[in-house]
Image (tube, rainbow, N blue to C red; front, side, top):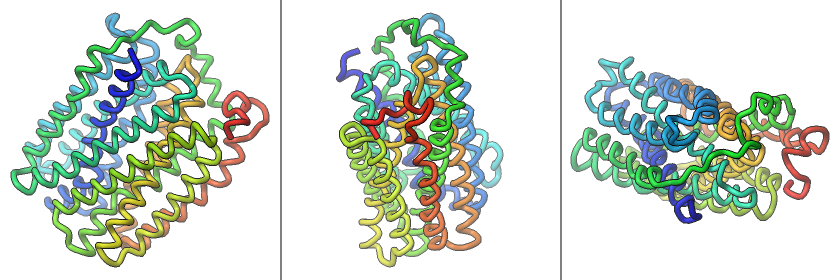
Amino acid sequence: MNKLHRYSMFALLYFAQGAILSYFTAFNAIYLQSYQLTMSQIGLIGVIAMIPMVLKIFLGMLSDRVNLLGFGNRRPYIFIGLLIQATCLVLVPGINPHDQYSSFMLTAFLLMTGMALYDTCTDGLALDTTPQNEQGTIQGFMVGGRAIGVVVISSLIGLIQNTTSWTITFWSLAGLSLVPLPLVIFAQERPRPSEKRFDWKAFGAFKARPIIALGLLGALYSLVSNGINQIVNPFLKSEFQIPIIIAGFLSTVWGVGVVAGGLTGGQLVDKLGRQRALHSAIFLCLGAGLALSMTFNMTFAWVLVFVFGLAYGFYETVYFALSMYASDPRIAASMFSILMAVANIGTGIGLGLSGSMVDGLGYRPTFILLALANFLAFPLLPVIFSRSGKSKTIFQPNQE
Protein backbone atom coordinates (compact mmCIF):
# COMPACT_ATOMS: atom_id res chain seq x y z
CA MET A 1 0.00 0.00 0.00
CA ASN A 2 1.39 3.37 -0.96
CA LYS A 3 1.10 6.32 1.38
CA LEU A 4 -1.80 7.97 -0.49
CA HIS A 5 -3.86 4.74 -0.49
CA ARG A 6 -3.09 4.14 3.18
CA TYR A 7 -3.94 7.65 4.37
CA SER A 8 -7.08 7.82 2.18
CA MET A 9 -8.35 4.43 3.36
CA PHE A 10 -7.88 5.23 7.04
CA ALA A 11 -9.50 8.65 6.62
CA LEU A 12 -12.52 7.14 4.81
CA LEU A 13 -12.94 4.35 7.37
CA TYR A 14 -13.06 6.96 10.08
CA PHE A 15 -15.37 9.00 7.84
CA ALA A 16 -17.78 6.03 8.02
CA GLN A 17 -17.58 6.25 11.81
CA GLY A 18 -18.20 9.96 11.58
CA ALA A 19 -21.40 9.31 9.63
CA ILE A 20 -22.74 7.36 12.62
CA LEU A 21 -21.32 9.74 15.19
CA SER A 22 -23.05 12.61 13.40
CA TYR A 23 -26.34 10.89 14.17
CA PHE A 24 -25.48 9.94 17.74
CA THR A 25 -23.96 13.30 18.68
CA ALA A 26 -26.42 15.61 16.96
CA PHE A 27 -29.67 13.76 16.34
CA ASN A 28 -30.06 10.64 18.47
CA ALA A 29 -31.39 12.54 21.49
CA ILE A 30 -33.64 14.71 19.32
CA TYR A 31 -34.91 11.71 17.35
CA LEU A 32 -35.69 9.74 20.51
CA GLN A 33 -37.24 12.75 22.23
CA SER A 34 -39.71 12.91 19.33
CA TYR A 35 -40.94 9.54 20.61
CA GLN A 36 -41.35 10.99 24.14
CA LEU A 37 -38.33 9.23 25.63
CA THR A 38 -36.72 10.89 28.67
CA MET A 39 -33.05 11.88 28.78
CA SER A 40 -32.45 9.03 31.23
CA GLN A 41 -33.88 6.52 28.73
CA ILE A 42 -31.81 8.09 25.97
CA GLY A 43 -28.73 7.88 28.17
CA LEU A 44 -29.40 4.17 28.79
CA ILE A 45 -29.52 3.54 25.03
CA GLY A 46 -26.16 5.30 24.81
CA VAL A 47 -24.73 3.04 27.52
CA ILE A 48 -26.00 -0.13 25.79
CA ALA A 49 -24.71 1.06 22.43
CA MET A 50 -21.24 1.56 23.92
CA ILE A 51 -20.93 -2.01 25.25
CA PRO A 52 -19.48 -3.35 21.95
CA MET A 53 -16.82 -0.65 22.10
CA VAL A 54 -15.71 -2.26 25.37
CA LEU A 55 -16.06 -5.83 24.11
CA LYS A 56 -13.92 -4.99 21.08
CA ILE A 57 -10.97 -6.12 23.21
CA PHE A 58 -11.91 -9.65 22.14
CA LEU A 59 -12.43 -8.55 18.55
CA GLY A 60 -8.89 -7.17 18.63
CA MET A 61 -7.55 -10.48 19.92
CA LEU A 62 -9.42 -12.31 17.16
CA SER A 63 -7.90 -10.01 14.56
CA ASP A 64 -4.38 -10.37 15.99
CA ARG A 65 -4.58 -14.16 16.07
CA VAL A 66 -6.73 -15.27 13.14
CA ASN A 67 -5.96 -14.68 9.48
CA LEU A 68 -9.52 -15.10 8.19
CA LEU A 69 -9.62 -17.59 5.31
CA GLY A 70 -6.20 -16.44 4.18
CA PHE A 71 -7.44 -12.92 3.35
CA GLY A 72 -5.59 -11.26 6.23
CA ASN A 73 -5.80 -10.32 9.90
CA ARG A 74 -7.47 -6.97 9.28
CA ARG A 75 -9.15 -6.48 5.89
CA PRO A 76 -11.86 -9.20 6.03
CA TYR A 77 -13.00 -8.08 9.48
CA ILE A 78 -13.19 -4.46 8.33
CA PHE A 79 -15.34 -5.60 5.39
CA ILE A 80 -17.72 -7.57 7.65
CA GLY A 81 -18.01 -4.74 10.19
CA LEU A 82 -19.00 -2.21 7.53
CA LEU A 83 -21.69 -4.56 6.20
CA ILE A 84 -23.15 -5.09 9.69
CA GLN A 85 -23.30 -1.34 10.27
CA ALA A 86 -25.01 -0.69 6.94
CA THR A 87 -27.56 -3.49 7.48
CA CYS A 88 -28.58 -2.21 10.92
CA LEU A 89 -29.06 1.31 9.56
CA VAL A 90 -31.43 -0.06 6.93
CA LEU A 91 -33.46 -1.77 9.68
CA VAL A 92 -33.63 1.14 12.18
CA PRO A 93 -36.54 3.09 10.61
CA GLY A 94 -38.85 0.09 11.05
CA ILE A 95 -38.44 0.14 14.84
CA ASN A 96 -40.51 2.44 17.08
CA PRO A 97 -38.20 3.44 19.98
CA HIS A 98 -41.14 4.03 22.34
CA ASP A 99 -43.16 0.89 21.64
CA GLN A 100 -40.14 -1.30 20.83
CA TYR A 101 -37.59 0.13 23.22
CA SER A 102 -35.72 -3.17 23.71
CA SER A 103 -35.60 -3.84 19.97
CA PHE A 104 -34.19 -0.39 19.34
CA MET A 105 -31.50 -0.96 21.97
CA LEU A 106 -30.64 -4.34 20.45
CA THR A 107 -30.30 -2.82 16.98
CA ALA A 108 -28.12 -0.04 18.38
CA PHE A 109 -26.00 -2.72 20.08
CA LEU A 110 -25.56 -4.70 16.84
CA LEU A 111 -24.83 -1.56 14.83
CA MET A 112 -22.10 -0.57 17.26
CA THR A 113 -20.75 -4.15 17.21
CA GLY A 114 -20.17 -3.76 13.48
CA MET A 115 -18.49 -0.42 14.08
CA ALA A 116 -16.37 -1.89 16.88
CA LEU A 117 -15.20 -4.71 14.59
CA TYR A 118 -13.99 -2.51 11.75
CA ASP A 119 -12.78 0.15 14.18
CA THR A 120 -10.39 -2.13 16.06
CA CYS A 121 -9.14 -3.76 12.86
CA THR A 122 -8.59 -0.36 11.26
CA ASP A 123 -6.52 0.63 14.28
CA GLY A 124 -4.60 -2.65 14.06
CA LEU A 125 -3.88 -2.10 10.38
CA ALA A 126 -2.72 1.43 11.11
CA LEU A 127 -0.40 0.14 13.83
CA ASP A 128 0.92 -2.55 11.48
CA THR A 129 1.70 -0.14 8.64
CA THR A 130 2.54 3.28 10.16
CA PRO A 131 6.14 4.31 10.95
CA GLN A 132 6.61 5.65 14.48
CA ASN A 133 7.41 9.18 13.31
CA GLU A 134 4.04 9.35 11.47
CA GLN A 135 1.83 8.10 14.29
CA GLY A 136 0.64 11.52 15.42
CA THR A 137 -0.01 12.55 11.82
CA ILE A 138 -1.97 9.39 10.93
CA GLN A 139 -4.10 9.80 14.06
CA GLY A 140 -4.74 13.38 12.99
CA PHE A 141 -5.93 12.11 9.60
CA MET A 142 -8.14 9.46 11.21
CA VAL A 143 -9.70 11.80 13.77
CA GLY A 144 -9.97 14.44 11.06
CA GLY A 145 -11.61 11.97 8.65
CA ARG A 146 -14.16 11.06 11.27
CA ALA A 147 -14.81 14.71 12.01
CA ILE A 148 -15.26 15.49 8.31
CA GLY A 149 -17.86 12.72 8.30
CA VAL A 150 -19.60 14.53 11.13
CA VAL A 151 -19.32 17.88 9.33
CA VAL A 152 -20.71 16.67 6.01
CA ILE A 153 -23.29 14.24 7.33
CA SER A 154 -24.62 16.52 10.08
CA SER A 155 -25.57 19.10 7.47
CA LEU A 156 -27.02 16.47 5.15
CA ILE A 157 -29.04 14.82 7.93
CA GLY A 158 -30.58 18.14 8.87
CA LEU A 159 -31.48 18.87 5.25
CA ILE A 160 -32.66 15.33 4.41
CA GLN A 161 -34.77 14.96 7.53
CA ASN A 162 -36.24 18.44 7.10
CA THR A 163 -37.26 17.78 3.49
CA THR A 164 -37.97 14.03 3.46
CA SER A 165 -38.01 11.63 6.42
CA TRP A 166 -35.96 9.79 9.02
CA THR A 167 -36.19 6.65 6.86
CA ILE A 168 -34.30 8.31 4.01
CA THR A 169 -31.86 9.68 6.56
CA PHE A 170 -30.99 6.26 7.97
CA TRP A 171 -30.79 4.65 4.52
CA SER A 172 -28.44 7.44 3.41
CA LEU A 173 -26.21 6.68 6.38
CA ALA A 174 -26.25 3.01 5.38
CA GLY A 175 -25.03 3.89 1.88
CA LEU A 176 -22.31 6.17 3.18
CA SER A 177 -21.08 3.41 5.49
CA LEU A 178 -20.05 1.48 2.39
CA VAL A 179 -17.94 4.27 0.84
CA PRO A 180 -14.57 2.92 2.13
CA LEU A 181 -15.17 -0.63 0.79
CA PRO A 182 -13.34 -0.22 -2.57
CA LEU A 183 -10.14 0.96 -0.85
CA VAL A 184 -10.40 -1.87 1.70
CA ILE A 185 -10.90 -4.49 -1.01
CA PHE A 186 -7.89 -3.33 -3.04
CA ALA A 187 -5.61 -2.76 -0.05
CA GLN A 188 -2.59 -5.05 0.25
CA GLU A 189 -2.11 -6.63 3.66
CA ARG A 190 1.30 -8.21 4.02
CA PRO A 191 1.93 -11.25 6.25
CA ARG A 192 2.96 -10.19 9.73
CA PRO A 193 6.68 -10.72 10.52
CA SER A 194 7.62 -13.03 13.39
CA GLU A 195 8.41 -10.19 15.79
CA LYS A 196 4.86 -8.85 15.31
CA ARG A 197 3.03 -12.15 15.64
CA PHE A 198 0.58 -12.65 18.49
CA ASP A 199 2.22 -13.50 21.82
CA TRP A 200 0.30 -13.86 25.09
CA LYS A 201 3.39 -12.70 27.00
CA ALA A 202 3.02 -9.25 25.49
CA PHE A 203 -0.05 -8.67 27.68
CA GLY A 204 2.39 -8.29 30.57
CA ALA A 205 2.67 -4.67 29.43
CA PHE A 206 -0.59 -4.00 31.26
CA LYS A 207 1.19 -4.53 34.58
CA ALA A 208 3.21 -1.35 33.96
CA ARG A 209 1.96 1.61 35.98
CA PRO A 210 2.22 4.07 33.05
CA ILE A 211 -0.08 1.88 30.95
CA ILE A 212 -2.59 1.57 33.81
CA ALA A 213 -2.53 5.34 34.28
CA LEU A 214 -2.90 5.88 30.53
CA GLY A 215 -6.01 3.69 30.54
CA LEU A 216 -7.52 5.64 33.44
CA LEU A 217 -6.79 8.89 31.63
CA GLY A 218 -8.61 7.51 28.58
CA ALA A 219 -11.70 6.70 30.63
CA LEU A 220 -11.67 10.17 32.19
CA TYR A 221 -11.15 12.14 28.99
CA SER A 222 -13.86 10.12 27.24
CA LEU A 223 -16.34 10.49 30.11
CA VAL A 224 -15.91 14.26 30.15
CA SER A 225 -15.75 14.91 26.39
CA ASN A 226 -18.60 12.64 25.34
CA GLY A 227 -20.72 13.42 28.39
CA ILE A 228 -20.60 17.10 27.45
CA ASN A 229 -20.99 16.43 23.74
CA GLN A 230 -24.21 14.45 24.17
CA ILE A 231 -26.06 17.34 25.77
CA VAL A 232 -24.91 20.31 23.67
CA ASN A 233 -27.68 20.14 21.05
CA PRO A 234 -30.46 19.20 23.52
CA PHE A 235 -29.30 22.14 25.68
CA LEU A 236 -29.45 24.59 22.76
CA LYS A 237 -32.81 23.18 21.66
CA SER A 238 -34.14 23.61 25.20
CA GLU A 239 -32.75 27.13 25.66
CA PHE A 240 -33.26 28.61 22.19
CA GLN A 241 -35.81 26.26 20.54
CA ILE A 242 -33.52 25.54 17.58
CA PRO A 243 -35.01 23.41 14.76
CA ILE A 244 -33.37 20.18 13.62
CA ILE A 245 -31.75 21.81 10.59
CA ILE A 246 -29.93 24.28 12.87
CA ALA A 247 -28.84 21.38 15.10
CA GLY A 248 -27.30 19.84 11.99
CA PHE A 249 -25.40 23.01 11.13
CA LEU A 250 -24.21 23.34 14.73
CA SER A 251 -22.81 19.82 14.51
CA THR A 252 -21.13 20.84 11.27
CA VAL A 253 -19.42 23.70 13.10
CA TRP A 254 -18.48 21.26 15.88
CA GLY A 255 -17.04 18.90 13.28
CA VAL A 256 -14.97 21.65 11.68
CA GLY A 257 -13.54 22.30 15.13
CA VAL A 258 -12.77 18.60 15.57
CA VAL A 259 -10.94 18.54 12.21
CA ALA A 260 -8.88 21.55 13.27
CA GLY A 261 -8.21 20.02 16.69
CA GLY A 262 -7.26 16.65 15.19
CA LEU A 263 -4.79 18.08 12.71
CA THR A 264 -3.32 20.45 15.29
CA GLY A 265 -3.07 17.75 17.95
CA GLY A 266 -1.38 15.31 15.58
CA GLN A 267 1.24 17.85 14.55
CA LEU A 268 1.93 18.92 18.14
CA VAL A 269 2.42 15.32 19.29
CA ASP A 270 4.96 14.68 16.52
CA LYS A 271 6.78 18.03 16.82
CA LEU A 272 6.50 19.34 20.38
CA GLY A 273 6.21 16.15 22.43
CA ARG A 274 3.51 14.08 24.06
CA GLN A 275 3.53 15.61 27.52
CA ARG A 276 3.16 19.21 26.37
CA ALA A 277 0.41 18.23 23.95
CA LEU A 278 -1.46 16.38 26.70
CA HIS A 279 -1.31 19.31 29.12
CA SER A 280 -2.69 21.58 26.39
CA ALA A 281 -5.51 19.13 25.67
CA ILE A 282 -6.64 18.99 29.30
CA PHE A 283 -6.76 22.76 29.75
CA LEU A 284 -8.52 23.26 26.43
CA CYS A 285 -11.24 20.75 27.35
CA LEU A 286 -11.66 22.35 30.78
CA GLY A 287 -12.07 25.84 29.34
CA ALA A 288 -14.45 24.77 26.58
CA GLY A 289 -16.73 22.89 29.00
CA LEU A 290 -16.95 25.81 31.40
CA ALA A 291 -17.61 28.23 28.55
CA LEU A 292 -20.58 26.16 27.34
CA SER A 293 -22.23 26.66 30.73
CA MET A 294 -22.17 30.40 30.07
CA THR A 295 -23.98 30.28 26.71
CA PHE A 296 -26.73 32.91 26.85
CA ASN A 297 -27.35 33.63 23.16
CA MET A 298 -27.07 31.77 19.87
CA THR A 299 -24.34 34.03 18.47
CA PHE A 300 -22.07 33.02 21.33
CA ALA A 301 -23.19 29.40 20.95
CA TRP A 302 -21.83 29.09 17.40
CA VAL A 303 -18.38 30.16 18.58
CA LEU A 304 -18.39 27.91 21.65
CA VAL A 305 -19.54 24.87 19.69
CA PHE A 306 -16.52 25.34 17.39
CA VAL A 307 -14.18 25.77 20.37
CA PHE A 308 -15.55 22.67 22.05
CA GLY A 309 -15.10 20.74 18.78
CA LEU A 310 -11.50 21.94 18.66
CA ALA A 311 -10.93 20.78 22.24
CA TYR A 312 -12.63 17.44 21.54
CA GLY A 313 -10.56 16.69 18.43
CA PHE A 314 -7.31 17.88 19.99
CA TYR A 315 -7.71 15.78 23.15
CA GLU A 316 -8.83 12.69 21.24
CA THR A 317 -5.91 12.84 18.79
CA VAL A 318 -3.37 13.32 21.56
CA TYR A 319 -4.74 10.39 23.55
CA PHE A 320 -4.96 8.12 20.49
CA ALA A 321 -1.37 8.95 19.52
CA LEU A 322 -0.18 8.19 23.07
CA SER A 323 -2.00 4.85 23.01
CA MET A 324 -0.67 4.03 19.55
CA TYR A 325 2.90 4.69 20.65
CA ALA A 326 2.47 2.60 23.81
CA SER A 327 1.00 -0.45 22.01
CA ASP A 328 3.16 -3.57 21.69
CA PRO A 329 3.35 -4.58 17.97
CA ARG A 330 2.83 -8.27 18.88
CA ILE A 331 -0.65 -7.50 20.16
CA ALA A 332 -1.16 -4.20 18.33
CA ALA A 333 -4.92 -4.40 17.77
CA SER A 334 -5.54 -6.10 21.13
CA MET A 335 -3.57 -3.62 23.20
CA PHE A 336 -4.85 -0.55 21.40
CA SER A 337 -8.42 -1.89 21.59
CA ILE A 338 -8.06 -2.52 25.31
CA LEU A 339 -6.94 1.07 25.86
CA MET A 340 -9.81 2.26 23.64
CA ALA A 341 -12.24 -0.07 25.45
CA VAL A 342 -11.30 1.48 28.78
CA ALA A 343 -11.89 4.88 27.20
CA ASN A 344 -15.24 3.64 25.91
CA ILE A 345 -16.22 2.57 29.42
CA GLY A 346 -15.74 6.22 30.27
CA THR A 347 -17.93 7.17 27.31
CA GLY A 348 -20.70 4.83 28.45
CA ILE A 349 -20.53 6.21 31.97
CA GLY A 350 -20.42 9.76 30.64
CA LEU A 351 -23.49 9.28 28.43
CA GLY A 352 -25.54 7.77 31.24
CA LEU A 353 -24.23 10.21 33.83
CA SER A 354 -24.75 13.37 31.81
CA GLY A 355 -28.32 12.36 30.92
CA SER A 356 -29.16 11.69 34.57
CA MET A 357 -27.41 14.87 35.70
CA VAL A 358 -29.42 16.95 33.26
CA ASP A 359 -32.68 15.42 34.51
CA GLY A 360 -31.67 16.12 38.12
CA LEU A 361 -29.60 19.32 37.98
CA GLY A 362 -30.18 20.98 34.63
CA TYR A 363 -27.85 21.62 31.72
CA ARG A 364 -25.60 24.40 33.02
CA PRO A 365 -24.54 22.72 36.30
CA THR A 366 -23.87 19.53 34.33
CA PHE A 367 -21.49 21.37 31.98
CA ILE A 368 -19.64 22.86 34.95
CA LEU A 369 -19.28 19.61 36.90
CA LEU A 370 -18.12 17.61 33.88
CA ALA A 371 -15.62 20.32 32.93
CA LEU A 372 -14.16 20.42 36.44
CA ALA A 373 -13.66 16.64 36.30
CA ASN A 374 -10.69 17.40 34.00
CA PHE A 375 -8.67 18.21 37.12
CA LEU A 376 -8.72 14.50 38.00
CA ALA A 377 -6.28 13.94 35.12
CA PHE A 378 -3.36 15.76 36.73
CA PRO A 379 -2.44 13.09 39.34
CA LEU A 380 -2.13 10.59 36.46
CA LEU A 381 0.40 12.59 34.42
CA PRO A 382 3.50 11.98 36.58
CA VAL A 383 2.78 8.25 36.43
CA ILE A 384 2.25 8.19 32.66
CA PHE A 385 5.48 10.05 31.99
CA SER A 386 7.54 8.48 34.78
CA ARG A 387 11.14 7.72 33.81
CA SER A 388 11.51 4.83 36.19
CA GLY A 389 11.29 1.11 35.51
CA LYS A 390 9.42 -0.22 32.51
CA SER A 391 8.08 3.18 31.57
CA LYS A 392 11.36 3.97 29.78
CA THR A 393 10.24 1.65 27.00
CA ILE A 394 6.86 3.37 26.71
CA PHE A 395 7.59 7.10 26.48
CA GLN A 396 11.06 8.25 25.52
CA PRO A 397 12.39 11.25 27.48
CA ASN A 398 12.86 13.37 24.35
CA GLN A 399 9.17 12.89 23.50
CA GLU A 400 7.83 14.07 26.81
